[in-house]
Length: 545
Image 1 (cartoon, rainbow, N blue to C red):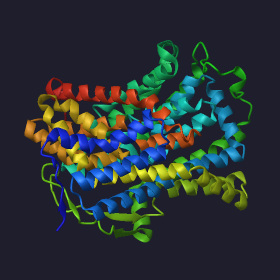
Image 2 (image 1 turned 120 degrees about the vertical axis):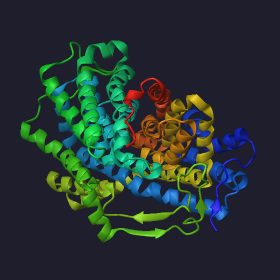
Image 3 (image 1 turned 30 degrees about the horizontal axis):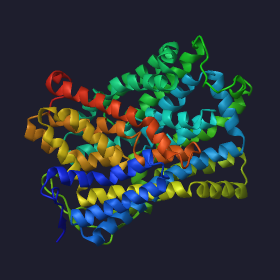
Image 4 (image 1 turned 90 degrees about the vertical axis):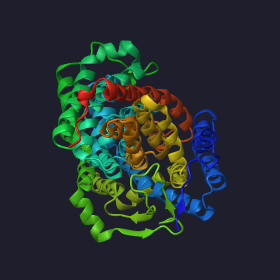
């Protein structure tokens, strides 16, 4: 018999919610304001989660430990595999000197740091999010920005803020597909609804980034580029999501934005070149210092990366690899041992817990393939290739430990039902629930590190609550995903990835403090838009067929 989750074990919604929130409070409190290293904060959060799950929520101890081990393993593969490979590819380009050419080529488009942030963090990052997702764009954009000469904190912050508006359609539409599966709603309608919310934020986020970097005056000096960057992305995002489905939304929008902004800055430049306050003119790479052939050669590894992650993301390719190489097995002590209550699940049944070793179809393998091909292109000897790889792994040892512990917390929280306890607390808000539906998605991504996981977590609960309150379930379930994207910049996994990519291991708390209130403010704006669409802008919500 599976263990049935209980969402109010203390017979007090307030006390039960308080206990359920303790693991994330301990984690973020120690990480952001306790000045504790990330892996120690994560360890404290995991201990808190295990104690709460076993002692208060009465989860069997062996099941709780199995959930922690399963989560830690998932943190190492596929998440850790993605991050290590992204940093490895960057390290190869630095080791061969090719990244210096990349830096100069970016400066040849514009020496202005605002333009560079828009090109790398928003446009290119959105394309990578659409093709791969799962931490890849943060790792790559952060590394590119730090390599281009951005201060570490700014590089991490810009990559995290930019990786928001594209997330709901990331990894070839996977979050929307999972939301449709868990809620039982039409995938195309969910895609259309997301496409009628996120374009507003696709326009806003680039401007938000520039204001964060350079203030209102800095935004005024570069607003035409912001409008081109965000406007083209928003227009393509709206069209593809409403008329073509969710699969290629970010790939198309990111690529269109990147091309449009690149062409635009060839004919327009800001009147005054903006640099960071402590940055000398000599810190900016010299523009046009390399031949066209040299620039193409230097960018070739990143072109290979884009092709590989896109190809690996195609369903036919992924299915072929999985059919021939993937190995999966039931997690001992966890598979079929936990069942959600009907309060939060449309179809409550024992939870399947399988660990899948899809070594060939994994996104990290696509990046590794790009690294191998790039090494051949750049003439890296096999011995040097292995040396750089080992150095990268050693450099990331604490980051990998932290990611494993973070995912262990997420899995214990999920399988113990503490996540549902937190979610049910939001359902008590009555007519204001449309606002809190978005905030619930934000919480889900902050807890799990993934919009896909948050949709799997709360998709059923969102539909049940919407129908109980007489609200449109398409709108409310979509808000889980669109609100969730704003939680992406503060989830511990993304914070750790950005810290590693910008060589700030140990400063994760500073990065969290930098982006935390931006995340809360943007999530609140999604909530307000959802509230308006629920009661006043109902014409924006697609009908249920």
